[in-house]
Image 1 (cartoon, rainbow over the protein chains, first blue to last red):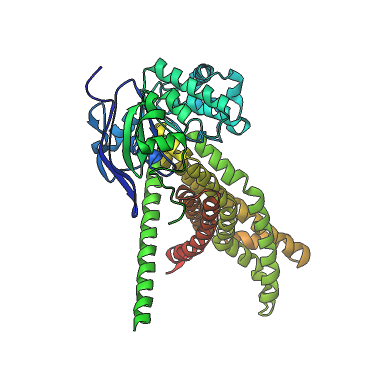
Image 2 (cartoon, chains in turn green, red):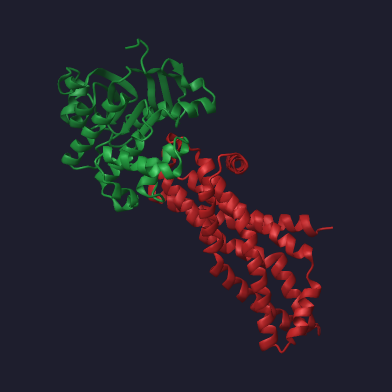
Length: 257
Length: 261
């Protein structure tokens, strides 16, 4: 394995007005591993992923992928780099004006990796990888249950076999069994593709299933990083309070400002 | 003195805010329009928007045009009778419809129907992360969502106005011949003799501009919406109001441009 991390963040900061969302974040994710970022609502997890994806420009810091600072790249190079990344959004973000198979094949068609005629069988094959029948491809996203929408969104994220995968709250809103199914599919996909993954979640069971390593974000800073298997017993009072869901501890909920 | 300074500060802030908003809208419009001529092109998205704007707006535009032509004939007949100039009804109807009422009323109707729908659709895509998803799937949202709609507005509105012009004149013709006792042949001859190419072309040019304005405001408000369902609702309202006001403002500017000598 190369010494250069697949993803390296140094001093990444982002504020919206006077609110500091990310505060000098340093993070390394080794190639072929899965990093889970945990943290409370509003701790900056989604902003962190969007900064790496290039959907939000950080105010300061560097974001390197394979040792190349993506923030200094021109628009075309960055767009090409983005083709190497797949993203599963929290609510699926399926295009509701398109059929399921068109959603799955969207990236392939956009990247001109296949013709429209060839896209359908490819989409069916990817749907099969997430346990969905080809007949589902003809449905509209609004006709699917939450769990099936997540599977379709996962199929769309992996369809173009990306080197890097991001998962934003993959099990939120799902029942425990469907959550386990989605986690299992994520682990299978990441291993099969050999991808590097970052998942953000506040589902501790999901975090331990998906992650090799884990980090906790609190008030825009990484307060702990270690093995995902140690999450429930880190010795860090903040992480322990969060993972055990205790009311008492160093993290105080801001009910009203 | 303090109250006066506060008032001036308020005016200044409002002016700066208006300048910033105009700048953002101009940049958005320039980006959207530039993507119309730069590949890749999304023919399916254009066709979908064209059918939505052109075909599905036909009934409302047609009804508006017919009734407007009918009212024009009725009103102008009673007004012109005072000067014994009833014979000018045909020319007044055709000029009013082709130069002004056809494009403006069609524009306002389409703004209410299509501008709102575009803002709601793109706004919902924004708040459900679908626009971010497009970016992650190697697709520029400006190229995929905005440019096809702008082009569809530019092409569809003039075609709608051709229909509106014909039906507006027809409405006037029906009232003039059935109710006011005009000779049908003389009315049509008057209409055709009086209308000039410039009258029709200027109306169609206005329609093209209005088509871009309607789709631009729908896309801009939807693209920048935030805050869930309430934000999408606000974007929809803003799109319709802004497009309607811009149509009337640009109507004056274009009329000055075409006809002021």
